[in-house]
Amino acid sequence: MLGDVIRRRCDELGLSQSGLADQVGVHVRQIRRYERGEQQPVLGVAAKLAETLGVTLDELAGVGESPLDGDWWSAREIEVDGRALVATVPVTLRRRAPDLLAVEGRGWSGELRVWEERTLTGWYGGAGAPGTMFFVLDDERALAHGRWVALAAGGAVTGGHAALARTREGAATAIPRSTS
Image (cartoon, rainbow, N blue to C red; front, side, top):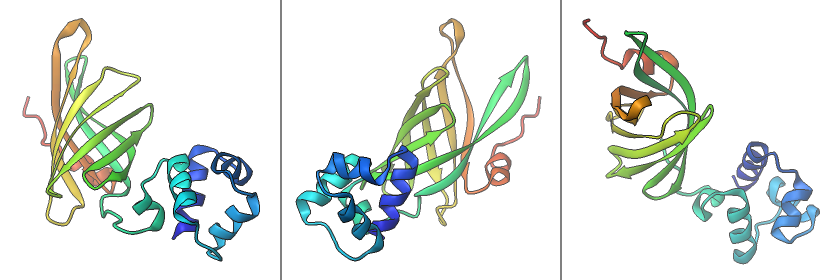
């Protein structure tokens, strides 16, 4: 598991084995041993690895992995030229702490606070206006539905329905259809 986390995060960060070794303060051979599962780092090195890779020690060790981690689709109800549309984008959720998820999508990122493994509240920012999100998870933790709110051009507050699902279709169909 440790090796999988190291490889995945290095790929995501564009970090080479030698770059990781330099930042952590170990030889590149040691990083290779960790990746192959031949050795486990001592606590001090594990803490430096986790910090450099932007993960918790639990995530680095592969314990407490969340069923929410991984690839999802985000859908938002938006209005363009007076027409109601559903915009979908792929997003990645990753547990950063027992009650915190990092959210990353195309051109934006944010955080979601996890309340009792059932409710998600948070913020996002990036290319467009920053906003907030509120989601309620279904019992299987495969779909979350809720609302988004953001500051629109001219200072108006805008928002609409939102959803997170494991598939694009699942996210899009979770948005209630406008009757107008």
